[in-house]
Image 1 (tube, rainbow, N blue to C red):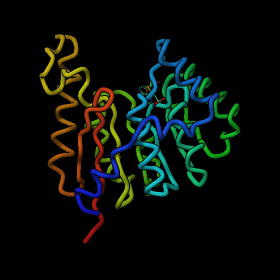
Image 2 (image 1 turned 60 degrees about the horizontal axis):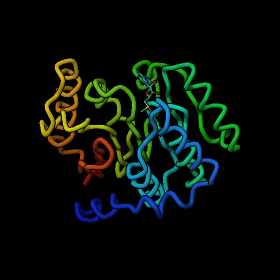
Image 3 (image 1 turned 180 degrees about the vertical axis):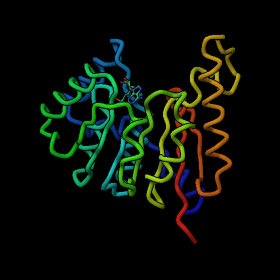
Length: 217
Ligand SMILES: C[S@@+](CC[C@H](N)C(=O)[O-])C[C@H]1O[C@@H](n2cnc3c(N)ncnc32)[C@H](O)[C@@H]1O
């Protein structure tokens, strides 16, 4: 796939992509936006759904389940997909499990209650899509494991990589957030410099980095 083809694949119309989700899931997503619980923004989810469909994903890994709304959207949109999702907060993990059961998707979504740092080394490689949506400061540290887990031709999607403009300096970063912004800068530098990856950073949500693992030539 050329760089242009990859860029075209990463364009999605949120209204079109999300319209196919069950109304009950759309209501949960709308409710999540009103309270403290973060879930992927519409534009980000639309790109994930398009990529998942176009790549005919069989195996998906999500880091940071939240209440499971993105895992559910992927599972319901891609009937052949098996999803593993990791969450470190027990309350959210339990809420996600309830949501998976309510939509009859518990057989295709494996929810793991753990710190992703402890689980990643034990996972078997060969994921078609990785959605990295956990602790931002860890992205760069987990990159070697994530590359190992991704199959050639698969895509690593990292959310919130521009974080309110703090990462590219377009908005002054509060002193308390300088370290996390620096780790995200390091993540972006690493994926952009990596010859095994082709990376696009889209200004969707708080910034979505999409890195496709090149096939060996
Ligand atoms: C932005 S939310 C995930 C939202 C979810 N991906 C979605 O789109 O609906 C980030 C989640 O990462 C979880 N998290 C934070 N550190 C983690 C870690 N070390 N391992 C696994 N999950 C973690 C948080 O508890 C939180 O629920």
